[in-house]
Image 1 (tube, chains in turn yellow, brown):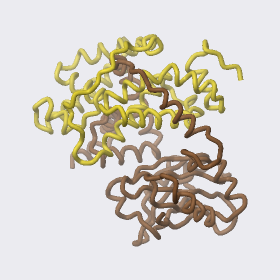
Image 2 (cartoon, rainbow over the protein chains, first blue to last red):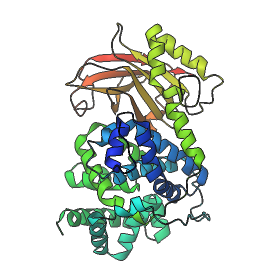
Image 3 (cartoon, rainbow over the protein chains, first blue to last red):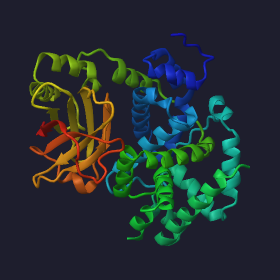
Length: 184
Length: 233
């Protein structure tokens, strides 16, 4: 198979789905630092983030053939897998979740060029739609996505009753959906 | 409860899909949503909408240097040859090879033997699923504590119109759907907490053929194409 470093992530994933290991390795090289950042942010534990990253790419290899049917951009698809694996791991922890304020080693590399180029219309639209929400509501949505907090954790951290947090998020989702579906 | 009422209609499903993608649901509700994701294409489409639309948020997360051992582990998991190494368990080539020369029940026993001495802490139940005669066959492994179940097709079903659906049939004999599974390869299923206590040695796993999207009323309607009992490792 003709796998080159100039191929797009879409092509590389498609080739991976056909069993092309070289293509898969390039996918890993281009995206793993980004996905590792996502896993670390949610899990706040290097050891666990490494394990989850490993599970993520094993899953990517097995599902790459199905990526073709996904409508998402490759990076959205990969981020979704990494986040799902991370959140599942987080929820599977023993009842006493890790101390949320535990100091974590914040990686300081900037976003990879690959990830940067995806900063597309989608991103501008999401930012615009989030800015139409009340600031604390947008912040709740943002930190749920990035940190993997449950409703309970969000309510505690933002110091509002659980029911209030649920209605913030649910109303925000409905507003976001309307806004995101509107052509800007 | 208003949560459930809300999810009965379309906008409730949109919200539930968004909550699932954000990750705010309790583990129980998350597992339920994940089960629907496997069996309801319409719900899966709602989830895909949010995954796509919200993923730009990940832009602001800084990338982090990955230790090289991670790639080594991935290669080991995926591409190590069929000698006993990490990842051998999910090697379908190995299963096909075993199944070709022996009955599937014997293959499961061999799995038990191979597992002794191989660190496989996540797995403590195994089942070989097969019909009375030759036909589609599957191997299921499960960690009863976490409810994580992995089912692998050894021989896929040839039926192209219908989809295989996995059922847990505990002592009361009432099948509980574990969702639609992939025709080929592996499917990971996470048992909802309430169902974990039902799974254990001698509990039956069965696969039926159902219409696209899964059994309409949550009860099996199609023929059982494979079944087998869980055994403790």
